[in-house]
Image (tube, rainbow, N blue to C red; front, side):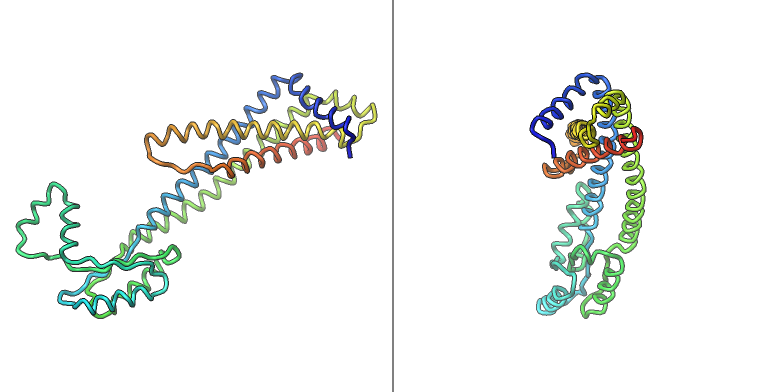
Length: 290
């Protein structure tokens, strides 16, 4: 344990080193900030892309087209059986008239083409919304096959080819995400480690002097630990500030985007400070033989 005077000395020494090596400290912090910005940017892009994929998956539903002439009781019985099926969140009934009104709205300015129809050709239907764990091609196939055997159901559709294509894209994206994420993370650690190493090497002479006067290993390491943690925290703060500016600018063109909340930002800054501080200790042990 350090005494009060030693603690005050270590705090003053950490601040003085920033002033003495102001240029190196600023450059090191900026380099670390760029590396951390790339890491934070990649993570944020990943989160937003996953959110987009999840939004598309939430739109997946099964539509069961009903035969004409089905009574209200038969439709209600089928709806109730669907609601009892595992993974089904909701079932909504769309009448023939509602289906025609929706189709007319989709046609927009061309809706006048429907006026030539003598009768409504569109069938009534049940639209089945599913829970997240059920929105897979396997589960959808099972439910679709079960629903197709129900009396009164004429046809079942859910866009099976589109669902399978979306699943393939999501799987490929996750694999690329892991690969690129590992590369970005390793690159950020490499840059931080080498940046801290340069800072330590710039103060090699002061370390030798401290050893000659009998300073203990931890007494020598502590200022570097504090400086490394401060540099990492400041670099992470700069990275988050720049990233927030980029995010705010991008929302003007692509709409609302997800950004880190306060807890995540604080965790990122704290983690970077810890990693940078530990990097200082590693550089001391490997290159200065302390």
